[in-house]
Amino acid sequence: MAFRRILAALGWRRTVLVVAVLALAAVGSVFALDGAAGNGRDGGTGDSANGGARTTQAQPQRPAQRPDPGGWPAEPPARVCGNQQVLGGGPQTPPRGAVVVPAGDNSGMETRLRTPDTTFWFAPGVHTLSRDEFGQIIPGDGSTFVGAPGAVLDGKRINRYAFTGEASGVTIRYLTIRNFVAPMNEGVVNHNDGTGWLVEYSTIRDNGGAGLMVGAPDNTYRYNCIAGNGQYGINACCGTESEPVSGLVLDHNEITGNNTDDWENKVEGCGCTGGVKFWINSDVTVTNNWVHDNRGVGLWLDNNNAGFVIEHNYISGNDGQALFLETGYDARVRYNNFQRNAIVEGRQFRMRDDPFPISAIYVSENGSPRGYGLKTVPTVISHNNFENNWGGVTLWESADRYCSSSAHTHPPFCTIKVDLYDDARCETAVEDEIPDDIDKYRCRWSTENNVVEHNVFRIDKSAVGRGCAGADYCGINGLLAGYGTYPPFPGYEIPWRTTFRQGNVFRSNSYIGDWTFAGFQPTTASGGRVSWADWTAPAPPIPATFTHNNRPETFGQDKGSTYRTR
Image (cartoon, rainbow, N blue to C red; front, side, top):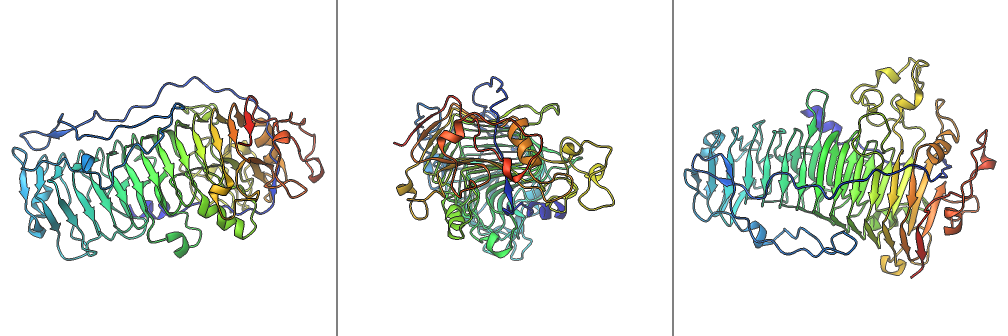
């Protein structure tokens, strides 16, 4: 497990060296997609007389949600933190057959709390564990931990972990879990990656590390307040060839104010913070959550994730991107509302005169290559609302990022086109080279088959404020790639390939406000941005050779889209 936690700390921190061309031929098609995904398990589970079984029970009253005519939530769908309509429904008396856990010092019960197939009812009040760093609850299979109204499990800034072990089928509900001090890249609840855990109607806040961990299949976390934790709200790390992580459901959670320890400023380039971090997960459903005001990225999909459904979320006020799709595969990103994200990071780039287009959604070497069994081809970013974020959507590919590159930040992992867990087929005795007997493009992650359509992009630069008003550093959609500095992919090869041969398309969107575009490079040769006229004008033919002097000036994007300044 320690190896997994170390991997979770890795992340690509983009540096713009020499950025080069992307223009885009509006090619590719989008498959018809079904409606919003379901929310996992049936709503409502309870405790039977035998203590451990999950049965239907009455659900707490939940505030009504107001949908926008566009399909995205007009207001947060998960106002959970401090909301007793959601969190206050725990049983006031012990369920039949339950073991009573009295308030106060529970260190003497830690052995009994390991009993499988048993329900433990935590009485109202504050509960504590052994007064050493490894005081913890190690559940048995099929056990349930339920809190009465006002039940709090408090680590007292002494205990590292609240719930550990590898039991399966554990349920935690109606508990407040606070003040545990998990180290960096570790977590407080489900620390050892149990399978099939259900955590619901609980508050997990003010802990070190991550509030919750995910490292095994079929976990469901729903209707929780996950707030103010030191590193992540949730750390979904890490699938392996023998232990895949799949089937995670995150639904109706409020995920807010995480990374209180500000790890990015303590560990340079760690890429290891934010609301939720996913690492090698598949078939994940993220729906109806409110992800807001996290220090860092809201939702970060990092390294070989696939099969994601991200729908009907309200993602707002995060310091970094609302959603970062990095070195991975297919996703369906629909009917979300993105509000005021990446303003802190955008201002930081502005202060150092870095023209890279910071955006609400950042796609970096991520997409849906055909022929590898992916569920959603192309990746779809559609029917979302973007309002007063620093930017909209940026599609970027680094020419120097491939399996055997010294710029590869995730060794020994490789691509779905070769082997997710081993880059040996792409290695030679010479650093940065690729063997002659393999198609070199199989050894790289690609920004490929991404369709951005039917979205509404709104910006009022005066409302975004300092650094944005009156400037062209914000209000940008981008399609660009890096100039290759390593032998397998030199010069402008990857930008031209990404632009015209990899199926990346903006189309049928609505732009309101002062929007500009970044194509080919962050800025044009004259130092400005790409205008709407040039962004939408027909793309040029692909030249026989790629030089500095034949970079494209038009991009053929946003067919069927509309643009108005107000």
